[in-house]
Length: 106
Image 1 (cartoon, rainbow, N blue to C red):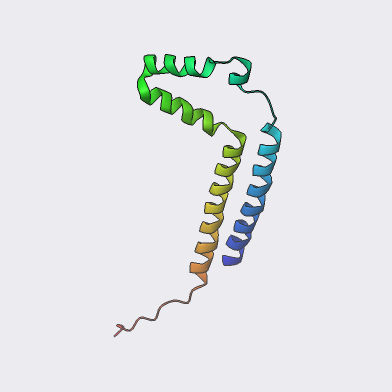
Image 2: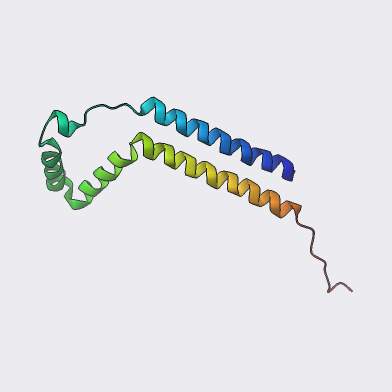
């Protein structure tokens, strides 16, 4: 069982690196930003968001835009896979530990 968990953790690491790299490569293309296409648009959009939703709406909108960046998506996927692999390796390690001796047995 521990060997299977170690194998699963190693496969998760390899798959995460491959998927993160592929996702970044597919979605990363040097397209002009909205600010380059329409100068002043971002400031007007943030002002409109501030009027409609307040400062919290502007902050939330900025967070969503940043999370949709391919590099950020790839990093989130890689971190999630690292945590999963760490969990597999840790559980495998715990299963390999010897059973503690019970000194209080009659």
